[in-house]
Amino acid sequence: MSEGKGPSPEMPDQFWRKIYVAVVITTVIVIAALWAFGRYFR
Image 1 (cartoon, one colour):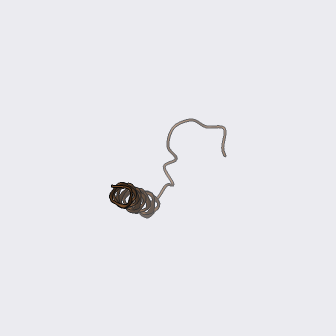
Image 2 (tube, helix red, strand yellow):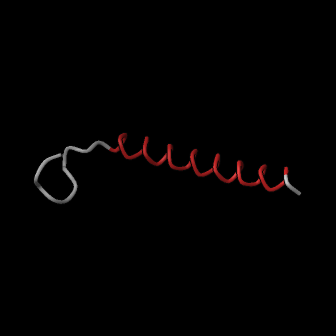
């Protein structure tokens, strides 16, 4: 990592789009897993 603070101007939007998609997918998987876990033990 560089010493400079703050976002780098070289960061492409696609990089953040990938992070956003990964976070959304992970959130959906976690919610679905918790829902299934709760249904299993009902």
